Length: 425
Ligand code: GLC
Image (cartoon, rainbow, N blue to C red; front, side, top):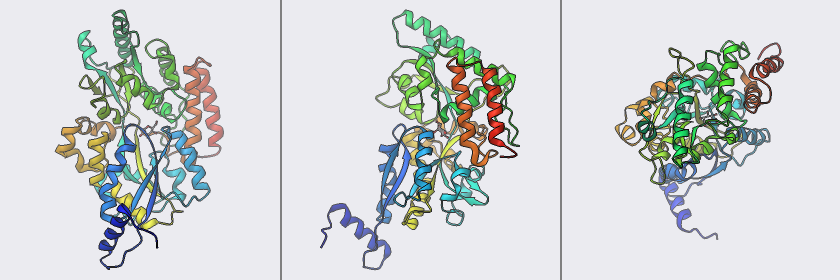
């Protein structure tokens, strides 16, 4: 007979107790795939402990590359192959329409939980009436700024992109003259991947250049304001941002920032808690504000992000997987994530939670920012969003690298997007 040791014994005992039958029921071992950014992997073990103890099941996190684009590629392969060994997928807010067919409909099981979430977020995960995934956190970026450096030079957080560039250059030059050779003015995500689509949508939208493809499906990206926005960003590369920014994703930008080598950073709220960690060189030395605008009077644009949990249709342990999905999207787990990872909850009441506000003050402050955030055109472009985004980030990356002007690249992009669209999305 197989020996039951330690955890297995405890698990079996808990499962038997929960079943209330005296005889042990099967304890499932689930596999959860998720991207790995910040402290998400370490925190996951803590996060799921209460659920594991209550149910007797166990869950292993299978970490994916940090890039959402790389994750998407891998997930698509697994799902197309009907991989049965992955039970749950952590999914980006933009993927619901493209992956909907592979996931279990959670409408019925989440009928009590879903109404406690912001309706727009639930809607973003609903495809033709099917609730494809449950939201676990939402995302909207901030402009991080160094309070100590701004104060030292008598500067205030910038309102426009031009002001940002000016302040960044001023402080960068002055600090370098004092021997801070590694200091840069502004770090962000310029690698050719989904994160660049997010950054560039913010520049374009805040310059009055639209949102690539409008909610009614019109391709709007080839316009003068969009071109001006991209030319502006190009002027940062090699001046206030290192040339290497063209290869940066979130974690590279945070690395420069958190070692004290940037005046400004564009990043998501997860970088807030980590920036205030004991090992951070900028602990207590920074603030956050909304991203700048094109010109005074324009509205700031933050791209809407966020993550969800979906249950694979090919899982052979669906009951346990659904139970875990409900737990991860529920108030206990969302509160834990808010406090330990400074992730923005999707449950409305958590914005009034005093423990969260005390631990991570960015969270209550950021409610209006994400509620007004700009969605990427994943809804109007349906199953074609990934292709659209890839064409957009390539056009932007080419422009930033000096490979064609913004106007030329946007003209070409319009043709490519029209081809992808064909007679309709
Ligand atoms: C963040 C956002 C996600 C976005 C990604 C881009 O993780 O939450 O929606 O796609 O950044 O890098």
